[in-house]
Structure formats: structure tokens, C-alpha cells
Amino acid sequence: MQFKDFVMSDTTMNPLSTWVEVPKNSDFTIYNLPFGVFKNKRLSPRIGIAIGDKIVDLSVLDQEGFFSDMFLPEGIFLNEALNELISLGKTQTKKIRERVQELLLADNEKLRDHSIRGKVMVNRKEAEMLLPVKIGDYTDFYSSKEHATNVGKMFRDPENALLPNWKHLPVGYHGRASSIIPSGVPIIRPKGQFKDPDMDVPGFGPSRRLDFELELAFITGKPTKLGDSISTEEAEDYIFGFVLFNDWSARDIQAWEYVPLGPFLGKSFASSISPWVVTLEALEHFRTAGPKQEPEVLPYLQCTSNHSFDLQLEAYIQPENVKQATKVCTSNFKYMYWNVAQQLAHHTVNGCNINVGDMMASGTISGPTEDSFGSMLELSWKGTKPVKLDSGEERKFIEDGDTVIMKGFAEKDGIRVGFGEVRASVLPAK
Ligand code: MN
Image (tube, rainbow, N blue to C red):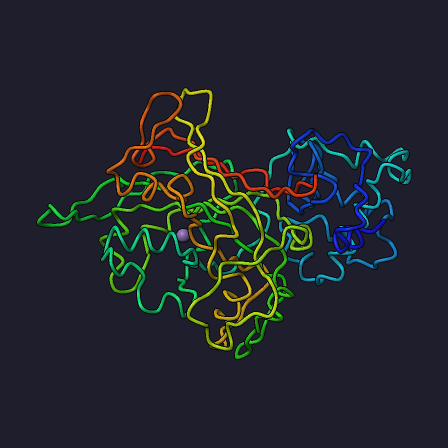
């Protein structure tokens, strides 16, 4: 049975089963099959698909002729990034993913009983995950109404928290691609200028208000020409998949520098992403309506179908020398006011071109309740309400030695598709 057939018809569901042992509550089920780039002690960087605690080494499958009918470019899977593979187009990448799914089905003996099986299935534990794509450009949106409202209340006017443009266009800024790092790489506390309200002149030093931002980012899979625009209708053709995104932020640096041109050094020091790219196809089953948009948006931002997904997003803090991480936030991708199709339509409406491997992050995704706020700024309400950790410690912002972990998954009708996690520890300033 094809994956497509399964997800398209909710009423005739036959659960898929695989011969791979997939632990209960694994994000990497037979329905997910995300793409990533890995290496280990023996193997040079290459492209794989995750299932359970294993990685399917696509380069070995290719060498053994499992994709021979697809006429793929030679060595396509022996790559340090997914860009070339993604550039083949969705028709091809979908076929590759569906072929792998077929091979992993319980009653398919082609790989299961093949002598090459041991070489194809690599232990995820022993693999080092690399940045999945070579990121050309990175854009960060500001698309959660709850987040924008919270920030507006704290820093501007509680009565008019949203700026006049907010409900008319997906606000965004161009970020820094060079400092996007894969999960596991520690970040160094940034230094910079800050000027608190009680200071006469700006100070300089390590940021005292280091924060995370709980976000999801999509990776573009198809280029446009300069001058061309993407409609909301076409937008999903240009989206390859999604990763978890921690948009590290230094709130004190940000507050002093951001007027009038927006975020700069308070953001550009690092962003962490999860290494497995979950395809748009894998999320199909979790598609849902987004919040109602009032007032009506301009025609180029209007949508005729749903572009939101019901994905639970979580953030955890684990202090140094503490065994357990404390969950500090549970949010959901579906809270986002502006959807991915609108973000891409808006981004290109002026003729700005996009390339394969561009990364577009959602902006902090906060929900309506206090435990669903996607940043420490909001959770601790600008440092006025410390967040209690299970260890008894409190946090207003992120301290040296802390590890921040983000998780994301969708679950419905017994089907689970998730992102695994993105984690990074904070090292003291240099
Ligand atoms: Mn952000």
C-alpha cells in the first residue's frame, strides 16, 4: 500500500506496520520517514531517512539498485546537504520516500531478507547529525498573535499591543544564515550593548537576558526567478519540509538595538535546528484550519484551503548537573495566525526570489494560556515572574550551563509523526 493512499482516506485506515523495531512513542514512525544528513566513525557524510532508532542509509540502497528505475544522478545520496536531492523536485523526493516506506513494510522481504540489510540500517545513536541543508537565506516571521500581543503589552502599550500593520501582513525580518547550527552544538553567550531604562549610558558585556524562541521553520524546495511571486495556492509546492527552530535571542541587546531597523545582533549569534527534515507529505494527516483572520486580508494573502497543522511544540530547560529537564512550555503550531502559504506569498509578492534551501521560521509560537508561551520573556513576564524548575531552581532567563530542549510531534488516530528534538547548552561568554 502506498503512503499517499493511506493518508488521503481517513475512513479506510489500515495501520501500516514495519519490520523495523520502532519504540513506542517514537517520532520516527513508518508514517514519518524524515530526511537528514549524517556521518559516523566509519561513514562519510551521507543522506539517510530515520525510522525508530535506525537510519536508512540511502546511498547503500542506491548502490544496490533499489532506486535504479528512478535514474537518479550518481552519488546523489553521498552529499553533505540535502540541497541537490531536494532540487530534483517533489515528484522525485516523494517517490524516494515512498520507495523506502514500501521496503520497510512488514511483509516486504526485498530489504528485510536481503544480505545488505545490516549495511543499510545504521544505528541512530552512533550517528552524528549534520546541518541538513546548506542554508542560503534565512527569514524569521512574527506570526503568532499571542506572542506579538504579549511583547506589545510588555514593551509598548497594553491597550494597543499589536501594531497597526500586524493583522494586514505577516511581519518578518531577514536573519543570519551563517550562524544556524544543528542540534547538540553548544552556543556561546553573546556579548553586546544594552541600555536598561535605569541606565544613563549604554553598558557592554555578556547578555543578561538570554532567551529561547520556540519556532518551526520550513525549508524551500524549489527556486523562483527574480521578479516572480508565489501565490498562496502554489505555496506548498515550494515547501519541502520542516524542522524545529530555536531562535536564540538576547533580550537586553535586542531591546536597545532594534529601533528603527529591527532585530540584529540580539538574534544573529545563533539559531539551533533539529536535524531531521519532516516532509510536508508526512504532515498531511494533521492538517487543520488556522485562526480566523479578522479583518479580511488582501486578496494576495487569501487562502482557499487549510495550511495549518496540529503539531504540539514543547520547550524544556535542564540546568547543569541536573538529571531531569523541566517542561516549561506546551504550545501548538496551529495557533499561528499567519500560515506558511501566506508567509511565502508575502515574502515573494515584491518579486524577491527564493532558492532551494532557504529557511523561513515561524516566529515564536505562543498559545493563549500562560503555560503555552514560547519564550522566557513571556513565561517570566519580562523577568517579573520567575519560572520554577523541578530541581527547585528558578529561571527568569537562560543561565550558563543550562540546556534548552525543544520537541515537536503530531498524534492522531494512533499515527505519530514528530521531529525528535533540538537541544543546545549555553556556554559562558568568551
Ligand atoms: Mn524569532
